[in-house]
Image (cartoon, rainbow, N blue to C red; front, side):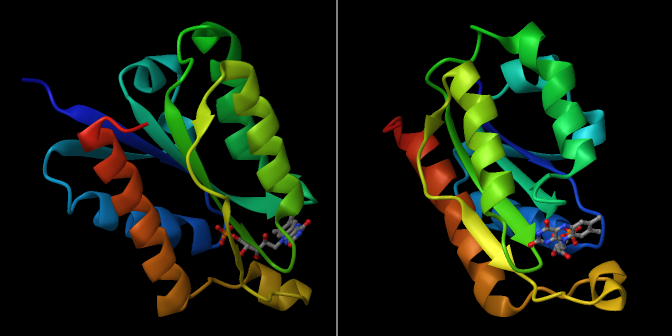
Length: 165
Ligand SMILES: Cc1cc2nc3c(=O)[nH]c(=O)nc-3n(C[C@H](O)[C@H](O)[C@H](O)COP(=O)(O)O)c2cc1C
């Protein structure tokens, strides 16, 4: 029997969202009944979305919205996937300097058009980057947020495995 697939789509400019996406995939991998696929947003389009039964979207907030590369993935995929993903579960992970609400809202609004089902509050991780130097530096995400991302991945995968979503 083909395994159900969890697709983790990520974009990251300075490493935080990438680390969080990796942690989510690690958590999801604890569920052996589920296949977890983690892909950079630039490589994902409607075919990859349609082949998955659940999604985690991980990206930074840039200028109060989703990073451009993550938005480009949604722009590229939105109409080809419209009306073909309804009811599939998703969760969002946002890395932000101090806010993240704008990016989380934007993802929720986009995927409401696809009629995806939210199965968790967005995980917003603030990296406390304030100055240009801090913002442009590579990020090291502390163990706490990594563990939360891992738990989110496991919860998604367990729900998919049990068919509860
Ligand atoms: C161009 C740019 C714009 C940013 N705008 C915001 C913002 O509007 N709100 C915020 O909280 N953080 C903002 N940040 C900070 C990033 O969201 C933060 O550093 C985040 O941890 C980066 O995640 P990443 O390492 O996955 O790229 C911005 C960073 C950049 C480079």
